[in-house]
Figure 1: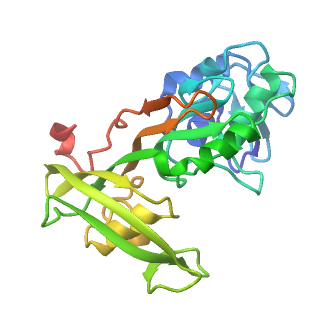
Figure 2: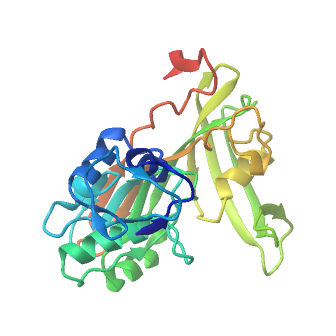
Length: 289
């Protein structure tokens, strides 16, 4: 992965800005492993000063364990699939060369296998959403997982504004994306997609609520739209009506994913803990951690 420095800063701080939800120690380990080059020279000194226009390249070193080199944890891996704990702030994939989970994994596996490995996108999490993200290691596995996608169980944590009147319920609607790439509820028509979201209140957090979310469909921005339609947008999700008071990231986390293994058929369940600070919106909320 290559990026161009836009303004002068320290190397460690720059790497942390690329992976804002990754622990500082994990980013340091990536640097210490020799995976980082600046202007085509490998560097390990975290205090190195970067200038505008410098080119920073991140590639795990061949032969090392992929889990120790990535800036995010690997939750499950075998020859057919790999599941990672996606940090918020990085896209699942990209077409413009910007940083993405798919690209970072592909670069690491390509080096480890001398170019024989590829990563296939099975599903996506929005850029500002964290949690369990599944990739296939070959096209046959990708196709089998997608063919059996209805058997996949997906659970999320969502911290929403206010507390829903009903402690649990279901939101169903037809969704469509407009020209500004915003998804909204519409009436049934050929270009719209039906979506179903189930929610359950786990606990109150100050004047907000932590919800357990289960989806039957996997539409773009589905949870974000449905909770907004419910009158309880996700905290931090200003695109779908949340207050601008809380400027930190969208409080939506994919906490668990279960799926039939594409070869063995065995049900694999992978979980990701709630990120640190997920329930903290303002001073005083620390007691809800």
